[in-house]
Image (cartoon, rainbow, N blue to C red):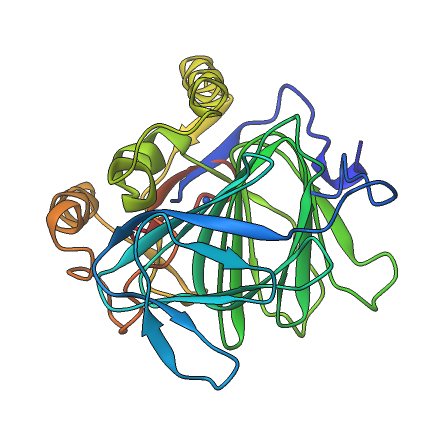
Length: 292
């Protein structure tokens, strides 16, 4: 277990409300990703060709390795791979899966990916950071100069390629936020239950295969709350930034209600789908005022 993830049982942690592993990566036998099928499309979803020109794509169309999928404003998409891995793209997201590998490149935007136990895992790359995932459900958001990674179930390791030892094990209900050019920081605790209620990558799609595992992790947090191991806070991270703000309960409730129908309502910047708002319960606690 990563030393930084160990916490004495008698220490109270603040739970951040946030909408977001190399732990079990099997790099030796994993077959490359060859194809994916578009299983759901909401709004403007396009396939970007080698010429860089976006073209319309329809549900059930097949994407070959090397393809790039792009979503527009207030749009979302779901890809299902042959090994039953599911990847959901938030609005304004650009995702490429490399030919002959199991690497997914997140050019910009936000991605929710669920890799079943039967699959061989995958790696997500975004600028200077990466996560190798297997038997895990993860939310990964990336914009220039900023990234956020939230683990919903399973365990994983976030790392910076080329920086030996700069990595951290992330457990369910934990999020790491930082700059790709800086060392990986310690995770904060995030409210999984709030994420499930507010993330459009959850509520706008059919249940994930890992839903029961995610709910189980949320219930663990609720039990920790009842024992005062986790404590709700009203600290919030708005938009795609890293600044922590103090918000009154009425304000956070208003954000939840507004973004349930208007995903961009509470954003101070034009990032339509950054990691959904989580409420912190840890020490310190953080809240992400976004909905995917």
